[in-house]
Image (cartoon, rainbow, N blue to C red; front, side):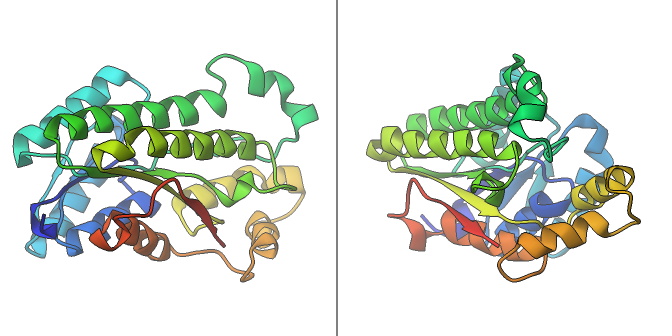
Length: 257
């Protein structure tokens, strides 16, 4: 299967890491289907224009990936337009209130559909299984790639509990679907220079009793290289996991900091 024949869905693609992944996979020769919430449609359309202007192929399909019917329709649209689904990048995530400790956050964590556990794990599971069903039906294998996080490491915060769960889901799915030629991996970046990071910085300024940039500096100090990652750096990791070179790499969710 040549790269030019592969179709990739990237969720959360309107900006940040998702946008960088979409641009990189299009350069790799994939036909890309970029998706995000309906409120991000204008950004998706701009991304499609950027991709098609360079001679590559892309379409935008809005979807809420926490709703299974939306994901089924998204996958169906990709298959109808391009004939197959070969790569699913489940890029969405929620970072709200991620600085809470377990003691501060027990109700928040245990609540059904809670802000951290509900959207992240449910959405990733829906992305994984919807893509897998299509790939199994096609009988040509595929790549499923999800978002984990460096925050799953010890001494981070309660967002890490969610990311540990996604790592476990990724490893179990890898075992279940290997017989179909489907690899399932995760990418676990540290703090990345995205609009979400700037939002978190602004949101926590009052809590930290500090000015703009204070949260970013705190997070940079926790990164191995002492800096935030660029979206394009994360996209290169995803590009490898989606490539033929990674054909026997599965069940991995390595950190990049």
